[in-house]
Length: 183
Length: 288
Image 1 (cartoon, chains in turn green, blue):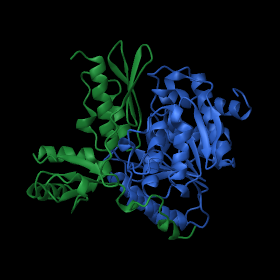
Image 2: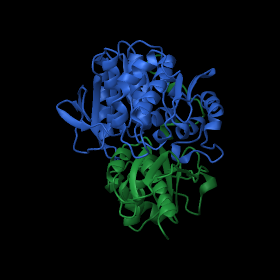
Image 3: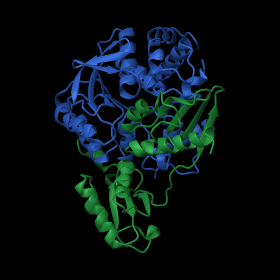
Image 4: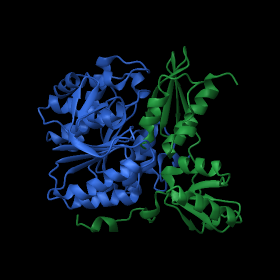
């Protein structure tokens, strides 16, 4: 394969240069501008773009952002009181996050999976004993912070993670709490 | 040389590289001691154990600290872009790295500039980027689990988190998902799909299945997918063709699990300790 020829190969008709991008949708243009300013100041690679017609909410601007860093970005915007109405991938605006949970009972241990992330708890002690799956670099870091902690005392990955894998682990964590802890 | 690229969950670690040595439950590389408990250090530790068993030199590690903010991954990508064209690497493995299409393509450019193109193996975040970039067929081996296979099979999905709901995450769907991944041009030349049944596949379909021995607890353990990728990489480096290497690695990983007798709370290092014996057994046909 030649030096440049591989960049010409396209298999899905999408633009791979934008495949790892997402769109943040807001109520109005002033929120878009504020969000862009906040995120740029924080060092994120964002740009203001027009959203596709199927996801327009009245505002015809959106903030394009690195999709994988979504958890970090959403947290920053919530802190700044500019939360988006929605966050969607550029490649398939109608794609929704995986919402299926898989629960497996090993007897003394319970495992919950959300998307590509799994968390396992010792039912006798309520202690998190394993975290598995995922591919973003915060997963090993989150695992080190969760394993050995009791489920009711552990920090939520949604508070401490940075990526979509961290977000998925947060969903598994919340579902595990729903399964194991009295409401 | 077998080289392994990835991150460790320590943001203070700069880009480092050097031979990796497994000593007890930790790795030593470039004068740093790194726990081999999950992620890239687990893959690297498994590759060390397998390489020693196969009488290969120790793997070469390219590592950086990154806790998910991407700064470390980007620094490592820049280092690779600068240095790979002058390197002689026979097998190159990419692992836990920030999925970034732009940097993926720059690194692949650097690989293409090498005098001899290495065999390319991708898992975890770099596999996500390879698929998103549309360059999956440039790779020799991907090692997805069932959820990640669903992501490869979904031509629109930008990350396993967004895999469409019509693709269920059940092992029964795996052969169909493999077909979809190849049809969409989103698979490496060979796939090792990890699950309750491990499957090795190529463009023509499933080549091998491995379902025994079966230690159910391994599904819950962090790192069992990393170890199988590390063993496969060492076998490829030892001269095995990619599909037979993946098949042997799947068997060896299961045998190591059987020897370790894990529970869902076990640590991956308990399995890594048994890789030398398990790999010898797998190569001798034990456990078939």
